[in-house]
Image 1 (tube, one colour):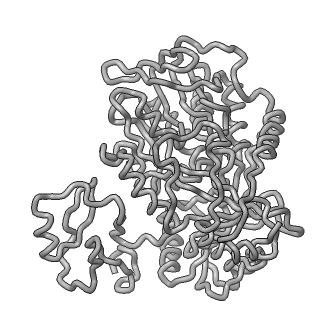
Image 2: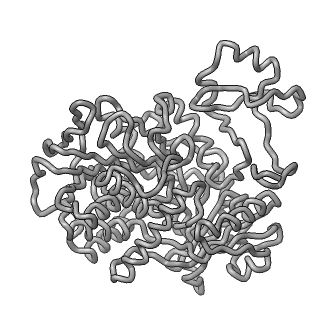
Image 3: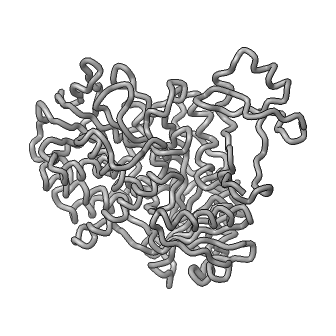
Length: 521
């Protein structure tokens, strides 16, 4: 099989590599045997009533069920999974677990996840948790400004981190070349987990405490009475319930449409690539996770191999007709080496030695993103006792432990111990759930996961949805528009046309004038 360098050079002439689904399936079955007891309840029939119904048997649904069980609601909870547990997006995810997130709530939720996985491992319950640390790299002065701010924030957020020079970065990970780097930030408490292993462990522990799991059970309708969840209709019968949790991953939007009124869960899948090399002799198992943010790529050690991926500047929407296949074989898409080329080039630039390593497979496994690249969590505004935990944008295992606990708190106590307004499901309007809007916006969203977040950053896609009658007059007067809840409103007036993009009225933001990313100078 060709090595990566040859594939990069001949991306336009590659034969497609067949994805070894049989091998993956075999690995999953072995793990299921090791974790005996995971799967459908021994009782083949659905209960007539359950206080909580969780839709989705991935790592998120498993985490919600686990925390409900820990809080004493195990016998009151069931999980309904349309296929088999862990076979949505959980089985192919990269498993990166990093504490730094855009909001304080996400930081705290991720820290809860890390604490949970550590605790389970100490009890002999497998999660694949490995505290190998993470190293994020900076190619520009602006990126180092972000890292310095992260360092300042780390004190209040209780995250150990260290700014490093290019030479120190290379000492931490000898695989990388550092000639073009300005510096980096080292976070020793970060690590990786195995999403599939974690999912099965959480489900097994939840089952041990009374949770029932029903596989191959598809929800067809969520019933309501007086604006409150009343039950669910499924392919195996009807279940009365008082609480419903939508943890359906990239099916969450479609599940939201199974109730009346519909629940807005604006998600759209995009093609997402994972590159797996063959085993590399001498590769250290504790090689840190490396994020080359300015190159939009990352890599990690995975069972003696390198697993690499990224978030390309322009993503490709998947399943644009809204119909997402239920089987793994149908969801795994053909490789598009032309599209992956931009990421492969950056991976080889950062780790030149990979050019001589043989490729095992390139996996094109779609992932779902929200229109603002944030998680979607909380009680739906349309229906009482209808909860959502979805849109984790490839890092579900990083979010699951914390989001699962917060969702369980919300169900049992009616509130959470954290203020999660930034990721609350109620932030969306109906227009945000429009399929055309999502298809347009999702092309741009994944890149923001690693992109520099300048002050007043505005999306360029999905614009001009709501405009005032005097919009054209304002634009003629030099208005630079920002979008708030889909509404275009002037942020300021700019008379120098050279500073404004004539295509969309957006200005290119820079930080050279303040060096503070919005903080007072």
